[in-house]
Image (cartoon, rainbow, N blue to C red; front, side):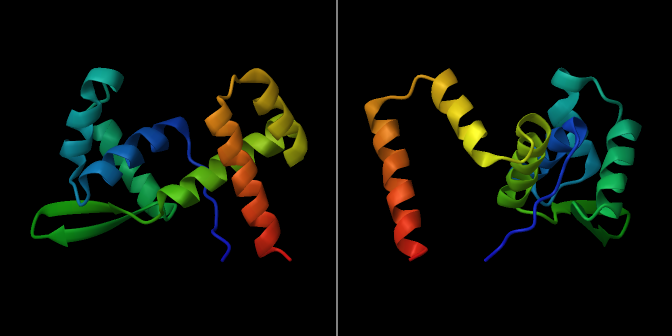
Length: 128
């Protein structure tokens, strides 16, 4: 099953992570959660969240005067979009150079290497 990827801006990442943790939630909840890190005003957060609704990243539910926001995409979809963007921008869309870069630039434990090898073996078995 293919999962559609979504490209989020840095601000959208900040907001959707709060929504994932607190959904459903109102814009003031998101603004308060980000206040110490971002110093964004309520109107900034509300504007960003409304734009995210228009982009299909968030959905809303109105209960009288309260608007509750929920994520309209999964964490997997958001990650897929982010990895696809990085792959395209930094590696010309080629997966092997990305993996080579990650393997050469990070120290992996024997357990982590074994887990990666196991994932590759499972993938090969599924595609036969």
